[in-house]
Image (tube, rainbow, N blue to C red):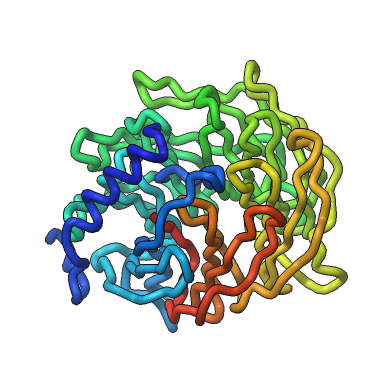
Length: 389
């Protein structure tokens, strides 16, 4: 993956070379998610770009991939345009070069779509079927040659090759999660995330239905996955999303069904993940569904989005990443915060609130990790993913 500085230079050339189109972009016309940079790398005041994943099949719903701008100092959000011709783009990822955006098409006939970014214009490069149902997450392998996707409905993960122009090729692998057996009350496996570990050595897939995290090795010549091991969570935990500490030896799981978080040890040599004991989310006794965790680039703080309780929990990260200490919760500023992300410099945190159809922004205090609201919520129907650049 390119350095933060070079990536910002590429994105600046691509996205600020011209204003965004004022009208929706017609069809045809992950950054891999990771920790924010260290606070010392915060950029000067300017304008950032925020891509929004939505559901287009719901009422009310989005009309494609939303594009907004934000003030890097104040966090103020402004809607810009919509990339149309992309169905149910509920999760987004950026190629390491910054030239191509990828979106899942979360429906029974699942697919992935590539969108070229150049000079402030957008061009849909095409869609490929994934072979699975309900793709809800995707990520780009650090080398930029492979796209990984996870299917909630069919409980499988897929691999697609990426061409030099960023377009997606025909699928090279599809792996179903057939073992272990589904957890209590589950009708089958439900793959919810697939990510590459920080050192690039292994790929992990989180399955909510099987209460399991699978470790794979990706064959980078052929685009196939070899399962090496799996880590079982307690029955009924419902692990949803996993986030690594910058040190690479600990990861944090948001468990949707039992409303807990789990600190896991990770062995880079073998890819083995070792879950610890479940910990509270700070949401009390009411119904709440953890969505995901973020960890600051300096590894000092972690944040959990809680749907139902509609809050963001702040943790202190201690013991080199081995311990999460609950500090507090703050209102998310919207209903059902499904996905969160840091701005590239880590000074802002954005939340996509699915049920209220809004995006909220928060300032992140670099010394205490405290969150404070940054401006008014941005209306964004069925917003379920945020990708700030």
